[in-house]
View 1: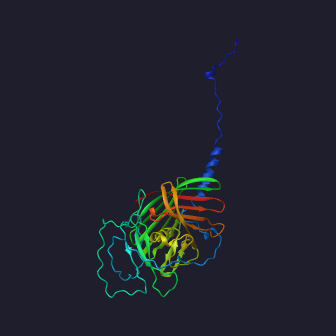
View 2: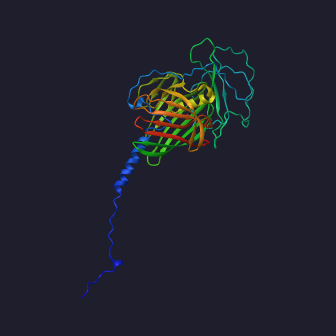
View 3: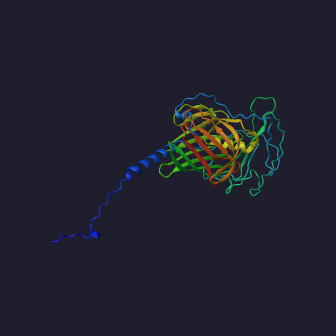
Length: 382
């Protein structure tokens, strides 16, 4: 008797599961590690050397630019000429504009008069401002979605004591705008890609700035700066930094100090002090006033406040470059901030006139080769 054989199509098939989970787990862990480190180092808020644990003792100084000759204040061409009334008495700080507040869409000229200049006994009536639909050229924007019109503020400033009246200096405040960035980088050889955004709002008196980098797995890091627009440009009132919980710095101008919610020591509040977010807009406002002041090799210095401490940041002026970015080609002026210590990053910042001199690119490079590169992708209305 012949043995019965099972037909081939009815024979059971044994399937061995493929062991892919160790490889997937390792890849997931590497990605989470890279993005976790990323959220602690966002480009638009440069990492603080003092917060990294390495002590540094440097005197606080304000911005210094050596001028060959006094710079005359420039009046927008379509605004009627008028005499400048005495500067009003400084009012108490008001709440900054929130993202839902009415943002300023027309130019606003704030002029200051040097203290040594005599004022007329009686100033003639100030002509009415032009209607809102009157075109006023402040900057020529070539982007697909240009920012709102810029606001110009003039202030008197002297770098060194002199018997001569200080030269008037203008700050061209960027108009309200939303800028989106592509961010790429590398940590310990692991590449990553995330999204970034800068939201800049103002109503002519107060401002509200916000940056965010986000990742769908780990959430986001948000930094905010709120303050006033004055004859000295931006004057921050509060700076916040939030990953999981927020830490903040408070600018107490009545007490001439900056205090911190992290209970770190207070620091003196010096004239011209900025925070780690407002410093970029202040630098943009200065560049927009007169690009000729920023010659290659010169430097701009700020006392810069972070969420836990303050440092002196020195930006060295480079040269104009053509940048090939995700959003197109932009002409920008390069600034470089050297590291304050071995744990600090080298920062390169490019400010573009077509973005009202706001950052088109920011690149941070650590000593071990890790880097973060933030590049302009698109410009939108806020």
